[in-house]
Image 1 (cartoon, one colour):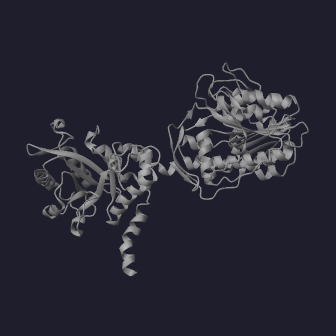
Image 2: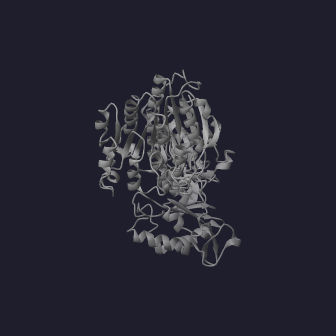
Image 3: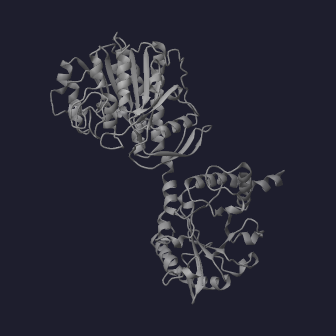
Length: 613
């Protein structure tokens, strides 16, 4: 049994190691000499393996794929050996400043290896401090590929020369010492085109090949692979050690940013199951809860769904539609124009808050509903003077005018305002703003604890910035708690209420191209959705609408596992996109939100439903 364990130990050890997450230093810059800046582009992208094809001509080694491509000055020495040696010496005897990063120079011999190797040894002679493996573990490894000597002849050449092995070759123990890696043509084993997943039989076949190399303690590489993120992901899952690429900078960006592009949520949170008793019913609507996930598109919802292991509160809604988000002056809206469309029913320009494209003040939903005796509350888990919440109470032609937006509360008919940005109120240019708001019967609170002690009345809850920090930094359930308390306060009004609660920082995660940031904010928003659905079931006269002002980041999902609660994504922009956003509805009247319509229709549908009962 002891011998059996020893026999399998190398496989088990490498099984653990090839499950590692690859880094940019696992990139193999294939046909590197075809780059517009050979060697240096791959080097500064952190590639751990750089390949140059060579021919011998007139006593020099030239880099070229075919003889006809040979050009004066494009020699192995000028393009690779000299600059590599200069950097090695600059880094005090290391390939990269970071000692954890290594480098091998793969020289693909196109023909006549006997004479090419002889010339290579001459050209390497001035750089023995650089190419001195195995004597110096920090040195750059020279690896020969292509037309190579027979394994039996490896020992005829200097120890610092290594070889690119093949999986179907049999090597002795001594010969394996000269093998730097094992490589093969992917097309010889599968017809997979790099899209989607491999078939199960192909996966088994390829993993067997890779595991065989790992059992010999050798890294594995496929050439002739598709060069795309999905291909890199699938190959990594198989256990490949080198990512073959013609785009080292793209591989660099993908792997360097992966910590911001991947999120794993091992344990899901519970999801509320609605009763659906009044869902879609043609009956009285007394209350409306509008929940806006700022920047939340379908991809963001899918990411949240996957990482909560296939469940979201918002996706318990049976009635769904799509909102077209274009602003008056651009197909790509910002939050100011997007929120104004929902708050006032009119398209306006980007950056405009509560005014039309000509700058004329618009009447928003809370002010309109006040004429019917309906009270309103506006909540954000971010800056309460930011564009989305501001559109429901302010009227300014510039969204950054936070002090003017704060002062617009003097004319607003809303009853509850909850969010951060104390300074725009307490340090306002109008030094008497707080006094005036108090004369308007607003109680000014600065903590949720203070707010939670009240039962009715008008309240402006101005939290410090720490109270609205990102969920990943410890915000807690501020949004959920604020909604519950606002419902409690406004439910005392016999004519009903309108509440808008914003998941503000889903958008922040999109702008920062930070998927963990985005998803943790979306999950927090979704937990708030659960409370709205629970109240709607208990009350029986409440319509819940869940939507977004726009999508942010152009998110696409490259890999996912619902079972593991994992997603790996990519962003196409750090700005907003013009794609439609979903509208999900629950409660009486929710059937009216099916279809595709302009974002302004949300205003008109809500107004019509609550005022025409």
